[in-house]
Amino acid sequence: MDPGLKEFMRKPLVKAMALSAAFHLAILLAVEGQQLLKPPKEVILQVSLVPTPPPKLKKRTVKRKAKKRTSKKATAKKSRPRRKRVAVAKLRKKIREDPEQRRLRAIKEIEKRVKEREERVQKGVLDIYLAQLRERIRAFWAIPDVLLKEGVKAVIRVKIDGQGRLLLAKVEESSGDPNFDRSVLQALYKAEPFPPPPGGKPMEVGLVFRP
Image 1 (cartoon, helix red, strand yellow):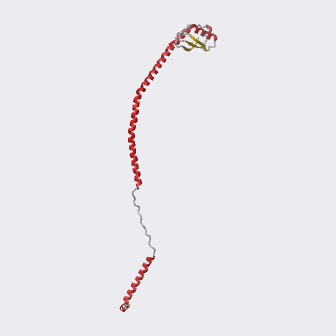
Image 2 (cartoon, one colour):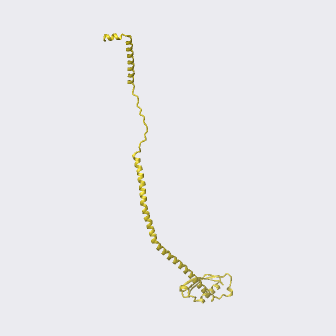
Image 3 (tube, one colour):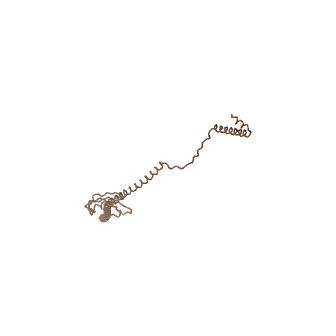
């Protein structure tokens, strides 16, 4: 060491300052050494939730919905003219069929009226003929007093041809008195020929005889 420096270090103040500086340096080195020997502290990252834009898939879904709506509208627009065409075709078909249907209904109505009129006429004619037939038979039916009993009745089935000739006379329901039944059959044979049936057609009727 330099002799001058040794002389300077021998002074009390300088010596005290040197000791203090050495002490602080030793402490600083000790602290730094401990800091270097300690494991490093964990680094904590603060994470904040930031809203992110919707994924592209969602955007595609939205676009698809819009396309579907558009397609529905387009389909609806396309279907309207088609429905109109179908309605017009049905209307035209109805117009074409209506005259034919009206004609058929008119024919059926006329046929119905004619049939009803014929039935009424036939019934009237038949009633008139049966009245004539009854009067004709009654004119030839002579009933003895002994046969005049209350509640006696005989039903005879009679068939007459178109010229009024008697083809059949059969007892369908007997009166219970053979003499009464015989008198009825005799009257029928005596009354022949009868008035011709309506239209000149054969007729078969059931005649009820009561005294």
